[in-house]
Structures are given as C-alpha cells and as structure tokens.
Amino acid sequence: MELSIVQIILVALIAGIYRFDRIGTQINGHNCVLWATLAGLVIGDPFTGMQIGATCMLMSLGVAALGGSSVPDYIMAAIVGTVVTVTTGQDMSVGLTIGIAVGLLWVQIDVIVKTLNIFMAHKQLDFAHKGNYGMMKAVTWIGPVLFCVGEMLPVLIVMLIGGDAVNAVLNAMPAWFTGGLSIAGGILPVVGMAMLLNYMPVKQFFSFVVIGFVLSAYLGLGILPIAMLAGAAAYEYYKSHAAAPAAAAQTSEGVLEDE
Image (cartoon, rainbow, N blue to C red):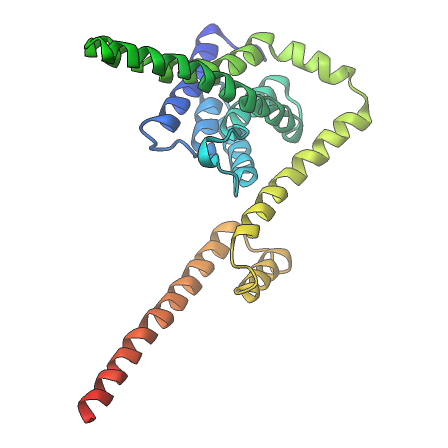
C-alpha cells in the first residue's frame, strides 16, 4: 500500500501536534491509543492503530522522563508501527518492533533538541537585557518548533521510504530474525507491566494480583470486566479504610466525654 501526499502530511502533522501537546497543553500527551488510532484513521485502518497504540501503552507503563532525562518515545513508536503494519501488510508484531526501534531514536533527538534550546535560552536572555521583550517572546516559539520537527522527521522518513522498500528489507531478512522480532514484540508489553508492578505495593496487595491472574488466565475474562471488578474491590477497600479513622475518632471522643 502506497500512501498519498495528503496522508503523509496528515500523519506527520499528527506526530507534530502530539509533541506540541506533550510539551505544552498536555491534554492527551501520553495517550498512545489516541495518536496511533488517529494515524490509523488517516491511512485507512484505525483498528490496527488502536491495537498497536494499546500495546505501546503497556510498554510505556512505569517509564517516565524524570528530572529532564530522555526516554524512548512510545507514541512515535505507535505511529510508525501503525504505518509500517498497514502499508506493508506484515504481522503487527513486526511493525511494532520497527516502530520501537524508531521510537528509541527519540532519546538522541531529545538530547539534540534540548541542546539547541540552550542557545535559544541565551538568545532570549540577550533580548531581555536589551529590553527587546517582543523578540524575547518570539524566540520562545523556536523551542516548540524544534521539538515538533524532531518528532515529525523520523515519521516522515519512514513514510517516504514507502511500504515496498520496508517490505523489501523485511523479505531480505532471514526467517529466524523476523521470528525473533515477533517474539520481542510479544515480550515488550510484559516488560512494561513488570516495570509498573515494580513501583506498586504488590506485596501488600498480592492476593488481588492472584485474583486478577485467575480471572484472566483460567476464567478467560477480558480486560473490561476485570477492570470493573478491580474498581469495585478498590472502592470497597477505600470505604473500609476511610471509615476506620472516623470510627476511631468517634470512639476516642466518646471516651473523653465519659471521663
């Protein structure tokens, strides 16, 4: 499948808007499902975009750019994975693994853009010292533009190469290698979940983990009913623990009154 110029521009704009939202408005900046679905909608397969976005969301659990650090861009990975999967007709796990490889480039791109922003900050400082506050504010927009361009370029390159070129590369790869990509694509979401569990009080709530595993592995329930049951259990847990301090306070007040 070959993409039209309009589709290429729209998908690139989606990537740029995502990055602007991530560093600015922050409305849906971390929602892999949304941006991958929008990319899939543009190229005619929103369902694949939704699947790949959900998988990337699982991978990104527990990953955060703390203290200005640079981390892989899982939304870029979701967009690229959607494009590769739809345009080449390859298995979703293969497209996803290619997307992750491109998403890893963001670590380097992020460092470059942040370094360039240092020069922008010094230029703003110069304009501020000269009292030229209009130019100082105008230079501020260079930062978001650099971030958006850094997001759009890898996505553009993948789309401009085209599905046929990507397919030719994939067909030239040995079966054991593409098979390994598929296995890696299946393992990566589990790694993301494991990273998230590492930050959660699993030991304290281990019984709930076991219940969730039984519901999924043995009873075959989907994510939505398990999430609903978990929400109900969390609500009951909250009510019981929120009521305990209040009851203790009332008891202590009663004791003081008796005295």
